[in-house]
Structures are given as C-alpha cells and as structure tokens.
Length: 324
Image (tube, rainbow, N blue to C red; front, side, top):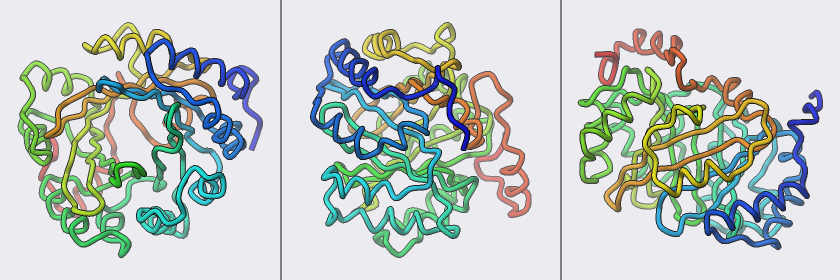
C-alpha cells in the first residue's frame, strides 16, 4: 500500500495536542493515559487509516475519535491485549461471527472516547449484504434475529456496516434503503424506535439532506432485541451548507481541526424513545472522503442512487420502501 501524502499523515504528537484542545473547547473529558494506550495499540491503523472526530448534542456528550481502517486486522483482539476491552465481554462472539462472514472479508475499525477509551468496533461488510446474512448469525440472541422481519417489511433488506457499542451492549446496523425517502417511509422507520414523532420541519430537513438511496442506522439492544434508536445520515456536508444544528455541534465543527485536504463533515439525526439528538463527525487525517467513496458512500449534493440496490430490489420483487 502506498504511503499517504505528507499532509494526510497521522502525527501522534499533533493528535495528542489536538484531542486535548478540542476536548477542552467543547467541555468533554480527556484522559492522556488512555489516549497513549489507544495510539500505541493501534499505531498502524492510525498511520494507514483515516481518523475522524465525533460528538453529539446530548448533555455531557463525549469527544470521540475513530479510525476507518485500510488494514485487515483483528482490532478486537488487539484491544483485549492492550487492556482496553474485556476478553469475556458477551458481545465479542457477535463481532467474531460478523468478522468471519464472506470468507473473512469484513474490515474492522475502532471508535474511542477521549475520556473513557474503547467505545465501539465498526465492521464494513464489503458492500451491500443481505440483512438475513448479518442478522441471523448464531451468536445473536433469538430476540435480535426476530427483528429481521420488521426490517424486511419496510424494504430495509441490505446492510453495509455495523458497529458494536461495548458499553451499552448494543449494535448499530446500517441499512441502505431505496428512496427517495418521503414522510410516510420516514414515519414508518421512526415508529420502530417508539419515540415521539419529530416536528414536521425537522422531518423536512432530514429529507432534504439525506441522499436519494438513504442510510439509516438502527440501534438494537443485543440482549432483548429492543430497538432503541434510528438515525439518518448526510455525509460530506460543506460548512456553508449545514442544516440547523445545536450550538454544541456548531462549536465542535468550528474547533475540531481537520488536516485533510478534502474536508468531510457528517451530520446524523438520531431519534428514540429516550429523546432526540444530533451527531456530528469531522475528518481529521488520512483522507476520510477517499475511504468512504471507496466504500460506496454517497455525499451531499451527489445523485445518491445505488444502482446495484435497485437491481436487487427488481430481482426480488421488493417494492416496500422503494421510490414513491
């Protein structure tokens, strides 16, 4: 793999200074010791991957950072070896099962809180994958597997990513749905969470920003199968074209440094029975936009139409959740 250009390289000392300053600026916890442990354990992933920042508008929200990996690596095993994760954690078998799919093709990435350490493990499955493959692995409890029918009924039949939340014993499962998304389909997906329907102007803004074939993440409790949240995403939104965002998110996007030549800001609208909030991500180094483009993610302002998905829908005769 060729080396990254100098202006995209990850510099550990610069990152330590940047993460401390960013955490201070948004009032988030920061642990130098945990930061050192993470950077040492995943030295190669940060050097060769894309690093990004993340926060939410929830009160007391953490400053998080993530590497999107260009390397195939057992990051869970490495986190265990570094003391960042308990080998007996009950969710480890789920990540192992997902990682073994498709001949071991899934790529693992890591998510960390600046003040608390290991937060999530991400898996990119290598493209559009049938939801049946992902949600029926034997490591998942039956109540989680039983949710498959609810997703298929909404036309959510293909998954591209999943992320396991180690602290909350949950998983975010990222579907690509055939759009364009309209108010009816938004309401049907939102109803899965049991949350209070958002105001019409909020829904209109989400619909205006998500791509035609949209990304929605559904958060599942990995014990009970309960659906906790749904979240819709807009990727690579320019700073001069941002939607309405809370003050904390605006402050984060202002102060979190990006050394990428192609700045990439992500906005997510999260809805659930415990309340709604906004997520924001921001590229740091390693060309996040390049990785997401290689993973066939759609950016703000693009057509956002997944022609492979549409062929699959035609082949299966699926119309639920399709273009209307």
